[in-house]
Image (tube, rainbow, N blue to C red):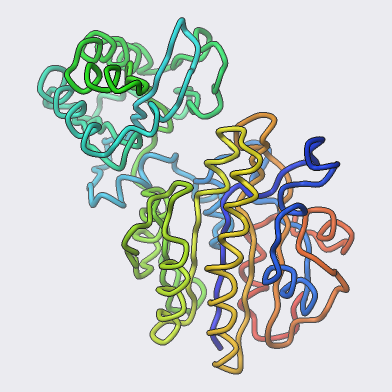
Length: 405
């Protein structure tokens, strides 16, 4: 049997007044997702336990079938795995966003979606001027970068009590009360402060201002953790898998789980990503693996920007260019299952990730119909089927008996 899971990141939302009380998922034209819902089963799942942050690290770990309370290690160590950075037992990985802060308000947690080349120049300056034997800066993709703290045995700087705030939770909000606190926070705040001084008249920012773009005013450090200990996906579920994504977090999770990582030309992690290429590469991957994951960041990015029309457009592109072609390819194998599900809600009103249930839709071999006419939050809720521990959805999806169980 062949399987596919499509993850339109953050597409779940609440009803919008501007859409006549519909959610973006309800307002979008999604004939392929609706066909999956009509032909099969819909329901809800909670991938963000209330005592953990509702980020894509926690949520996608659950979507992939691993209980976050058991395996969660922080976001940055997963992204370190994507870059091939090895963490020793005393080391800590720290997410290092390039951001724009004006008058102590988070103007943009992406520094105007700064280019990867510009980010590399800024990180190189940081490494040269601020780096030291125990501190390394590693450029990633655009604003998403890493700092690594190389620890020494017997000298504990950070701990699980170190508290940081994701910058995407602070959009258009004051940041004065959200700097790191707890063990090691003095070092984190020092590095963030030094970056202000280094970036103020950096050539990258001078050029960006002259071009009418937002400058990267400083780094924002958050999401720290130590080396994760995750079993391989095939070891846990006896399926060979592959992942398609443009986001280092998901690349890292795939690397840790032993999934084949498929790079699609033009996949950006933004609204301009290569949707068609993702669908094509996913359909082709089914010939050599049992299960393919396709993650699309675009709906989440639109939510962070508070752009309802862009969110609808992203959902429609996922349906047209990814869900449709993958569903067609799966049907040619005879025995198959496909699931569409976001990882977490991202409310346009709040411009950030939220706790709560998300809808899923599954069709294929031995899937019982639940009577839904479309794929949406409300249709999923009406089914009455809820996986309160969302990570258990994977086991049910891959079991070759009736679904829902």
